[in-house]
Amino acid sequence: MDEKHKIACSLTGNIFYIKEMLLFKEMNNILICDVNAKLNEKGIWCNPSRCDIEKAIRNQAFDKILNKRLNILNYFTESIESNLKLKILNLLGLCKKAGLLEIGYDKVVKSLNNNNIDVVLIAKEDEKLNNIFLKKIEERKILLVKTFSRSDIGKAVGYKNVLCMGIVISNMSDKLKADFYKLMRFQLSKIIN
Image (cartoon, rainbow, N blue to C red; front, top):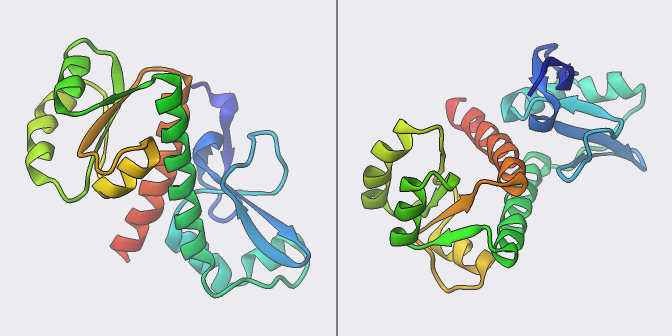
């Protein structure tokens, strides 16, 4: 991605790719985070760091940027995380319908060997698969995601439980990688603080 797709975070001034940022808007004096925002929409574009967002809320930075007193719900940051997760799970369902998923260990390994996938999801409960895939994933630039439970992944794609799946290289996998980045950065900043 080239430099023209980068902008400064409204909260920190640091430069990020816009597709990896979150968009905040005001609606009826309530601050909302639009996780489905299109890249050309207007609002407050920020890096997806939970601690930066919480700090901005405490310091009333959103109020100052928008020049108005905003109501911010008590569960605001939790709703951002749950909306990001819901968006990703819905996109996984669309990937399944489009035939862009390899589900199950054997199919994922075969696709890894053929360089057909660029994202691997492993259920967060499973450590054994994590160790098996780590070596293969480190050799290539493949994103490993361990955010969802096996039942969450399964429900998204129409199964009871899914331990692992790979996303076939496509425009959809690029979109999902940006959303996974947002979610993982948001969750990581929570763990660090």
